[in-house]
Image (tube, rainbow, N blue to C red):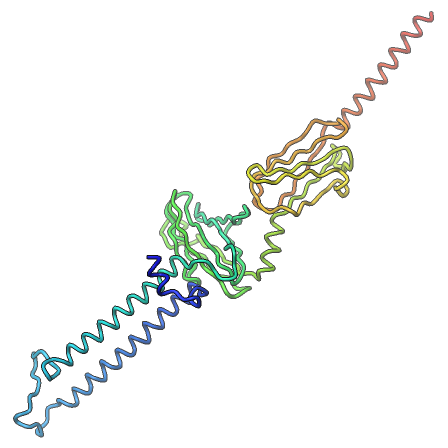
Length: 342
């Protein structure tokens, strides 16, 4: 199959979108069908006129009769020639169409693009859920960069669905436990395309829709970077920012990412971390550098912008209790000294 695909796929063809491919197949079939129709109708009209019933026909002229198999004259050479030409046209059309459909199944590596964008699509509960290869997740709206290939891994979380983007000629089965891989490439930045479910899946099947939002590549990168942002705030029980005496460690549970930020890097008790490349499960641990509180760890599943707050509940209370105990201890020592003097 790969050999056949390589033989009929040119570098120019590899830059085509699914819309281009199906549009070209349609135009070729339309043009060829129109040409064949014109030839057949013209030849029929020609013979109808040539062999019309008139009083001028010669008695010895061999005219076709109703029900007689036409031979085309000269031992049927015209008939066999027409069959031969028709066979060549049909076989060539089948081979060409098959090569185009092979390209739709596997377009290969896109020129000038090292990695395509991969998105996992899940249909569940009459809605579409999208997870990018960065770990960011969205619901109902699939944002993609223009003029870049998007690979979709389609599955279902409950019953059978069928994911489709009619404008992009995309359709893939969404079956629980299985993945159907397909792709598309949108060309018009700023355009939107409707997502539909093409499998009767339940009561709210008709409302199982979504939107593809095509963005400029730079705008898409900005949006993705805004999703890969963490903001942490440290405050006390009175919601007053704490500006010293701690450090924050952020660690990805599955990838090689671990960074520690000191209190000096916080601005009025808040820090915004933008050097994140992947979402997913993180551990954020706030540790005291002066022993004022026990380490606090939060497990975070990053599917979008993170905004977390560490509240040091017992810090003021601990300080107050410590000062009270010191005062009471000093008082006991004074009473003891007074008693001893007497």
